[in-house]
Length: 247
Image 1 (tube, rainbow, N blue to C red):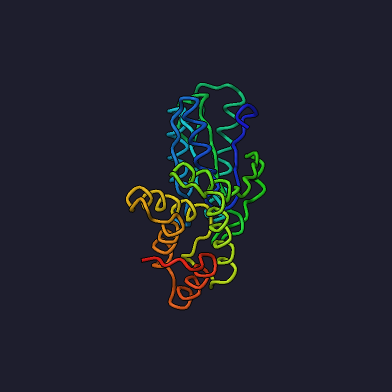
Image 2 (spheres, rainbow, N blue to C red; image 1 turned 90 degrees about the vertical axis):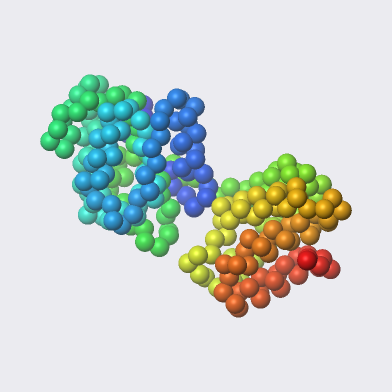
């Protein structure tokens, strides 16, 4: 995308590593990456200031959840981005941006990430889409990630336990009510794995691995549920971990 003087637009579900991939690539190339969380309150003036700073420092800018910006603002932003890309394609050292003559470093890069299908997101105008090369980020293999993380934390039966975790999350996402704060994606999954590793290191050596995982699943998830869902989640835990009594 950068070699074609375009931006890059990774799109995919939350927690799939879109922003982290951009940050890691910038780090590997020795460049500063500035992450900006976009929202409905962002206007073209604040975007212009961000882009102005990126051009003069040669840094990469990652605009997280870019499709949360209002369509009326995006149309102006598309003009700002296009002027930068045209200056880059002409190999200019200076150019006029927002009525000011500013320095342009060729290492500047503009990236946007999007979560399509989520509430509060708008469809990008065609004038914006043409400025960015799309990259589809697929849902990661949660079972494989869980297995590796559990093995790294010293679990012998990591493969079986990871499969149970994925099964639990799939059933929970289908059977529990749809609440705004519920998250059954990779971010929540990794939070449970982190808690599992901590409990494994601090628990008694003779504790069963199933008990350690059960504690992590219970303590991480139960506090966020409404009353009816908490009871149903405990039922799912009992079905997946039968005859396991967790203190």
